[in-house]
Figure 1: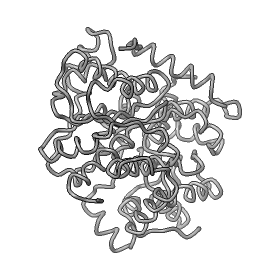
Figure 2 (figure 1 turned 45 degrees about the vertical axis):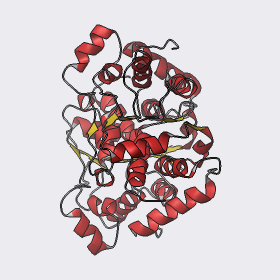
Figure 3 (figure 1 turned 60 degrees about the vertical axis):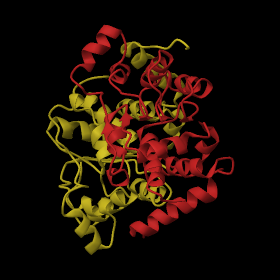
Figure 4 (figure 1 turned 120 degrees about the horizontal axis):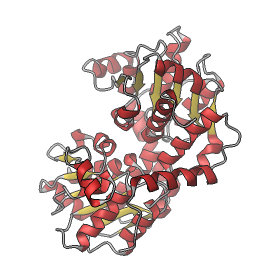
Length: 209
Length: 209
């Protein structure tokens, strides 16, 4: 058996030191760099730094919202599970995907359950964390176009082969005047979305900076 | 707003058609190819196909175990959340990470909570799904070396910058006579681990093949 590092503090420090030394982070404002670092840490891929798109105000807007008690909406249970409640002690993390009405809503709207679940979100000033379904991000953008109240930030990390790249391109190109952070292309996932929320929670609590 | 596909069946079909057409799958036995396809689907990266290591018996062993009622142990709640219970109706999915004893066990053992939680697993004939912590995989391999009963299969997808590549290399090079599937390198994650479990559940129910 090869030796391995068992000390949680040493693992944590070495992990983040590696991300900081290897990832191309210089283009980011300092608050967004901290979010990028935790997203990279969650997926093991320093190369995604070059494919993050964002609005300059996304971290400051989301941090202010968290401090004011805004909820986080997650598009799936994995994203909600990945949010470390200890880092966001006052924050209500909501996932409506498994609400009882959602299957019928999806059928009557002719869409996915993930998209129908978005219609149950109170977007006003909320943090939105999408780590799975492209249709959830598309539906959110439709709702904003139709006049739904503006979220404080959209963390857009849907993943996969149908609609993920397209929904994130739509977000980056036409963010509907909403602060956002997203990863171009097919890559994404719940770990990245929840890592972004966790980073914002740490920043909101006054950590890291 | 650009048009997008809303039909769940069409999204599902197009996603898997893309994976099958783009991913290098020819080297895999047919049952392992089905698992690889769902792992790729979960992360949006066809290129990982070339970095999957496995024992030829991993799918058949895990499928037989699931049919016989074996439990699944997950190293974190995100992996457990990602396992679709509908696909594994008779399967007990267990995560011991947040058990009350774990923090004290970790302190007294001088290791991480993720590794300490592994000591609470009944490995005998179980399916092990690791999607987060390298120390969980290292600790499992230590326990097997110390004579713990053999699992039916290890799905090894720890992620990150400290120990992930090393723990997976240890698994692939010295699997302790246990069937395994793993992804070389830093990449991994809970979505991949739970996707592998879901694929095995579908195969165990007689689907796909």
